[in-house]
Image 1 (tube, helix red, strand yellow):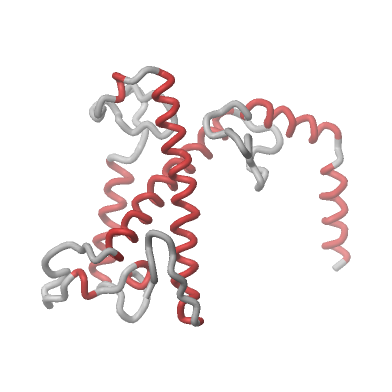
Image 2: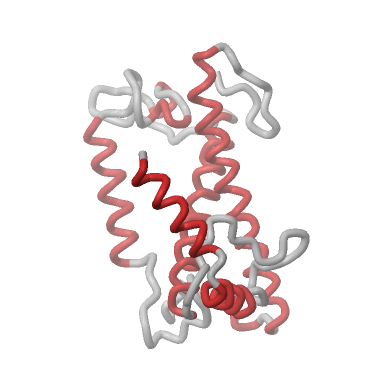
Length: 210
């Protein structure tokens, strides 16, 4: 108990140290004009991940992770919308003849008594690993323009035809959609877990989870 109190006091004292405040202020000033720092929140770092003596490499790493998680969450949320609308892959998921639509939606499809077979999960993990290792990465020297640019010299879809202002706008849209999707898929996962407690609201877009 005494050790915990001492640690708390030390942390409180460090928070008021002038040099630390100066470093934090410098970091905030360095990144407050980055893409994604926009109204109404501006530069928003509630966890203090950029506090202290943080360089551009640290910021780029965090932005890389944010973009990738946002893209995954957008796919996850879209998957929830599609499958709960009754749209599933045709055919059977295994040799036993179980159809894709015979399995539950959401988290229950991966965890629980009615989840897909273990072999199916292994295939999913292997496929995601293949994408991660072989494709979803920034290859140096291929002309990528920003953190999270995975074109790697062979995917374009007209990106090079946009002017700089349009590029920034589209990157900001992706960033914001990814942030919204992270909150959205997290909210759906939480709602799925509390449905057994007797709470099953009629959610926007998704509807009822059961």
